[in-house]
Image (cartoon, helix red, strand yellow):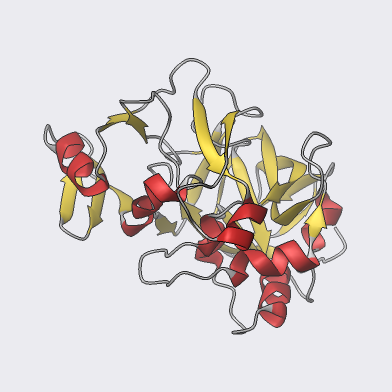
Length: 276
């Protein structure tokens, strides 16, 4: 790796898909991702689709809720909500908040799908009822999971500094981009682009293969807990960093990279990140 001083800066886990998550002091990473990450999801019982804030008109309220693990399992908290995933009242409570009937599930339905909006349409028109929807089957690189594409998402502090430098308010909060691993790197730039196709070692055991740049959707623009809406979190990338992650997608606003796990391991902040 070009930057020999790269190291893990922070670890994040999201026990329920599209909810806010938790910061960790250490994480076990198995062949299917960070243990406990996206272990659960909400299923829209009317459509059979997995609920995702990528369809913000229906699901942006998911980002008012926080999921964290505790001895009882997964605790979900937010405005007027404090339930455990195992509570018999959990689905009813969450359905009342979201205005749609949902159930918590721990296994994706067969050929699970989600709806998302075109990020360029969001920047052009805002979040409206007429935004066209794209339907996709997710977890292409991690079958049988609730990941959108691959089991691990990394972003560097160099990328966050570049976004901040280009952002009108001079701010890029990593929470908007929902990484599992924030990698501390020197410099200022989208250096992860150069990692695609390479194998990385994180700490003593974990080995990853970086497979693709991460295309960004509407989610960074939305309010995240106490963070207000911020269209520039996506607009900066749309104007200054378009990458073709997959040939079928064309050029997309990207930040960070997706990775597969070649060898599992435990990682902690401060662990070195370098070529395997």
